[in-house]
Image (cartoon, rainbow, N blue to C red; front, top):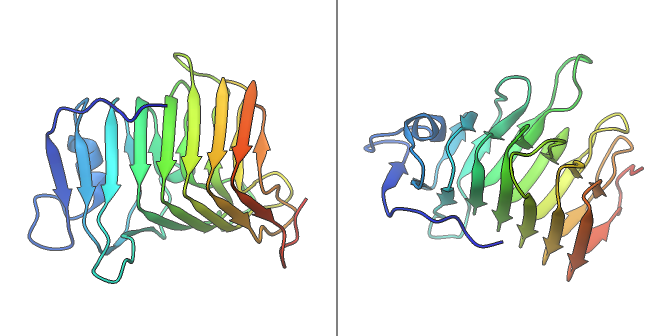
Length: 212
């Protein structure tokens, strides 16, 4: 899956001094082909990407810490809800998307929504949520999903929220150079209904988790 084709137009997000103080503000302002640069910070935020060919790229601090986004969930779905096509999310820490009730029990760090297509996560850390990624059962085009260089941990809920779930609308799912570990509450570490799956150079480990 090639990276999105972008225009070179960059929307910068930073805690102070930028046009956008939160990633969600840049998501709302973006047009097709934009790059959203999220500078290091701790953002209590969630938002929806509706446009296509979007890159969301985190910029680490001098110690290598990724920008943090989470502690808030939009639409009872996720921290980042992807509704467009050809989306890359890179170098972010996404955390704490947990339904406090028993109404859904299926909130995600990344919700890959109905009719979205072609999603890539690279070098992200997803943790402490019901789902790491919750994938779609309908897509508007041929649909490839790639996770590479990512860490998924402390995910799962009630046996049906998982480290990741890829729906039947995914034509090809690739998990590469990643670690999935320590799920809880009987969630699967990796669950996929994609038509084809490639898992390579990755660690999938229950460790101390209560996995399915």
